[in-house]
Each structure stands twice: as structure tokens, then as C-alpha cells.
Image 1 (cartoon, one colour):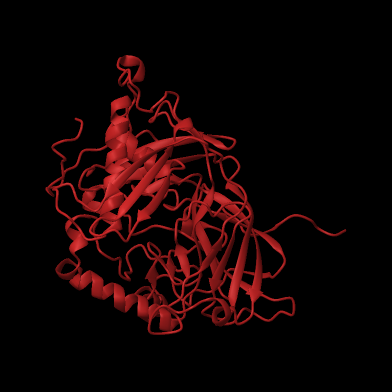
Image 2 (spheres, rainbow, N blue to C red):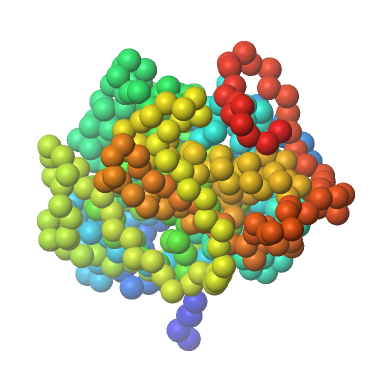
Length: 452
């Protein structure tokens, strides 16, 4: 009899560590990491994934695990998966790999997730100068909905998606990555004025043997030592796709990824139940274990046909994403503006990052009027289905960014009213997020005009 349904190509046991899985996982990009599975175009196949921390962050009601987590040892990916056409010929450099997301969700029996911020000494997040402490909220899933005991009065449908989908880089592309990121790490503080306003560190995560997992390459061997010192970290998105964190990349979506090596070597991971635009708290989606059911197509010579290089080599390209038809429907939004003036009052020139930071800070301060702590609002805006926009980028000197929050996710009316903001214990949101102390000595940023 013919078999129906997706073929499981990468299984996961959530009770085991990433390096104990039946098929080895990896947390680096390198062309020599061997594929663990092979698929043919047109076949629907299932890939299971651990959460980004590989189980290091637990559902215990404490933030100590996130405080002491190493954010550079993240993104345990399932794969690589070698892709062949119907004749058995592998994808080739210069092709486009079209990856359709047919279905996705949390792993059965593991229906929970977390949102968190790293300690400022450990990398922090978008607003780490305002929120230096490690914090965490646990979320539980009720079908398509999520709720958190640490952020009461909020419930919303998730737009589930993978944070990472990417192909393996060629050695030439890998060298380009390492060279430009090393230049940023070594000289960024001297030449990048934005570092004065955004306080996340390090500026880049360079190749390192610490915490390196290279799939089927055995740790401690000369081959492992060589590759570990070359392999790119999975934290930023790059030309191969990777950690793009596009929240609308859900069921029915399609990704057109450039192919840089034979077979493409597709990898995926970092599943999110829900995420706001920007994933501002860094560990900021509702992180979870999960599965994808995928179908691939190879577009021969597609890079040349459809992608325009923006840089000095033909490798300086970016993927194309086709958004699917499935997403939550909200009709009413409260929108917060931000301009490119920082908290000290300093004017920046058409800086959309500074403008978005202002929009987020405005939203956080506003929600504090309705009983939420600022830490609750920070985590909520990182993981709820809010919409970030660059609304203006030509009207010098100010860029204009907006953050839109769907009002239906709250159990109270948060719109401005003539009868003032409601007061009283009924709107105080307790308990608060799980939180640790900040033991570092870096200065924090405070807005003297904000609500306490």
C-alpha cells in the first residue's frame, strides 16, 4: 500500500540533550558539517526541533537559568538535510531552494514555551540599558492560544513559525562573513555611533570552540578543531537566510533560499509559538520545541535569474519570503510612534533603530499605567503579535517608526478615555515576571520624564 503523510527525517526526544539525539544537531554554519538526512523534491517531510536553548531553559518558576545561560551557545539546529531532484541530482550552487511550510506546531506533550531577557553582562537585549536584569515568563498553550501566569490579563493566538531556516554557506561566503564581522567586533566601538545608544554586547559573535556542536563531526578530533574555529555562529541572519525571525513565516509560507554548496544542506530550528516584530528582548519570542512539515523544490540557476547581488561578489544576495495565508485577525490596534531622538534628547539623523527604540519605550511606559510592570510589558511586546513599521525614512532629520499593539489581547480596555486611566487593585497585574538581580556595574538609562 502507498504511504501517506510526511516522512519523519529528523526525530527529537525532548528528554535528551542536543548531543544525545538520534541524529546529531548542530549550532554553527559550515559547509563541511555532514548532512543527517536526504530528501527529494516534491516529498513532504517532517523535521522536529528542540527549543533554541536545547532544553537549557526550564519551566521552573525561576530566572536563574536564563541569568546564567550563555547566549552564544544557542540555536541547536536540525539538519543539515541534503536535497535532490527527481532524477537524484542534488541542488547545486547557484540554484534557488524553494522550501514550503506545509504544517508546523509544538511537539505533542511539550506544549509550553518561555520568553526571557538575558542579563546585561551576558548580552542583554534591545533595551538592556533600561532592563539589565535577567527575566523570564512561562507560557502555556491552549490550542492556538497562549497565556502566562507571569503576565496576567493577556491571552492571544500564536502565529507559529521557525526563527531559523537556512542553507549551508560555501567556504568563500563563510570567509566573507568572518572577515566583516571580525572588523565590526574589533573596530565597531570607534566607528559605529549607534553603539552609544544601543548597549547590547558583543557587537558580533565570532567563531569559537566554546559550546560548539558540529553534528556528525566528533568533538576533539583535528577536523572538529579546524571547523570549530571557522564555523559561523547562528545568531544573526545572513545571505543564507538563517536567523531571520520573520514572525509571518507560518503555515503556507514559502522561503526561496540561495544554494551555495552541493545538496543545499538545509537546516532549521528556533521554533516560536508567537513573536512580535523585532523580538526585542532577544530571547524574546515564545520559545518552544516544535516540528515543521516541509516540501522542497529546486529552481535551477535561480540565484542568477531572481536574486540581485548587493555587494562586491555574486554571493552577496538575500532570500525571498512568500508569506502564507494563515495569521490571527485583529481589527483594532493602538499604535505608538517613535522618532530618531534618544533618551538624552540627542538628535540622530534618520536613524530607524533609535526611532523604534523610542516607540517601544513609549508603549512600555503607557502600559504601565494599566497595572503592568515595565518588565511585563517588555516581555509581552517581544512575543505578542504586535506590528513594527518604518513609517518614514526620508523626512530629515527624523526617521519615524511605529509599534502597533492589538487591543483584543487584553482583558481590559487600554485605549485613552476622557474619564482617565482606571485605578485600583483590580488592574494591578500580579504576579510579576520571574526576575533576578543585576550584579554588574554598567550604568542604566533612565528617562526622567517617564512613569515610575
